[in-house]
Image (cartoon, rainbow, N blue to C red; front, side):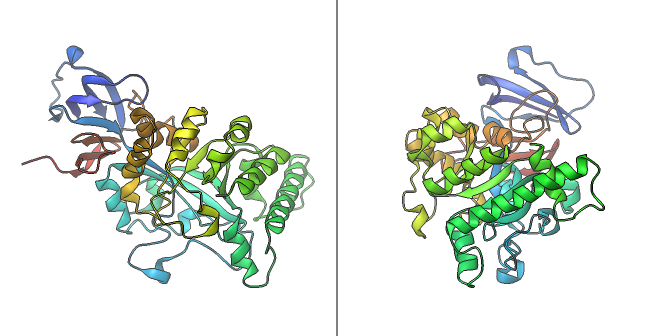
Length: 385
C-alpha cells in the first residue's frame, strides 16, 4: 500500500508538506517527498489523500481499556484486586477483553496502540501490557509484555485499605510496604544469581525485570509529595519509574528534571473529584515541556474516554504547549516512555505500519479520522464518498 499526496508528520524529522508513505506487509518501507515518488508495478493499493494529515498511529500511554469495560459495570471491572495490597504477579493480559467497545472508539480516533494495566487501589497493582487496539485475541495484539509494574501512592491505596482498617492506611505505610517489597525482591534476585534458591518464588519473579531496568515502575502519583516519594524510592533501589498523572508535577519541575524520569500527564479532562487533584491544570504540559522533561498525555481511560486523547493534547496546546509538542505527546514521546519506540510512534522505514490519515489537525475537535491502518491493514475507513 502507498499513501500519497499527504502532509506527512513523521515525528522523526521535519514534516513533509507533500509526501508519501509506502508499506510492505506489516512494516513501513518508504517515507519521502512526492518529488521522489515512483509507482510500483506489483499492483499495490494507492490511497491519494489529497493534502490530508498523515501521522503515525496515536498512542495512549496509560489506560485501563478492556480491563474496566464500558457497559458492563462491576461485572466488567477487573482493574483492582483489593484483597491484598501487593499483587505483583497479576498480569493485565489475563483481564483485557478485546471485545470492549472502547477499542473500536480508539481505532476511530486514530489510536493504534495502548499501555494497559491494573488500577491504583493497591500499593503494587501488577504488570502492564503494551498492545495494539485491533484484534480479538490479546496474545496476538501484544507488542511488549510485561511492559511495566504498577505501583501507587497517595489517596487511592490509603483509602482502599484504610477504609477496611487494614495496612497501609497512611502515606508512610504505603512507602514502607513498597520499600519492604523491593528489599525482598533485591535479596531474592541476589540469591537467585548466587544459586542460593531452593525454588523460584512466583510473587518475586515479576520483580526481576524491574530490578534489571528492563521495565519501569509505573508510579501513580498526583500530589507533589507523592511524586517526590516515588522518586526517592526509585533512587534508593536504583530502578526506573514513569510518573503517571503527575498532577502537581508543574510545582516541582526542577526535582523531576533532576531525577531524569518522564511524566505521563493527565487526565485534566475531568472534574477535580478528589483532594489530590485540586491543582489540576492543562498548563502542566507546557511547563513540563519548557523544563525539558520528557512527557506524554493520557486519558487514563475510562476516567476520560479514550477517544478524547487528541482533544486532551489540543487543550494542552490551547494552554501554551507548541502544536508539534502536542502531537509528540501522543505519538513518539508516548512510545519512548513506554519503551516501544523501536516499533511504533513515528513514520520510519522498518517500523510497524501503524498509520492514521486525518482531515486536518487531529487535536482540533472538528477533524475527522479518514483512515486507520494497523500492521499494514486498513482497519477503519471514512473517506468522503
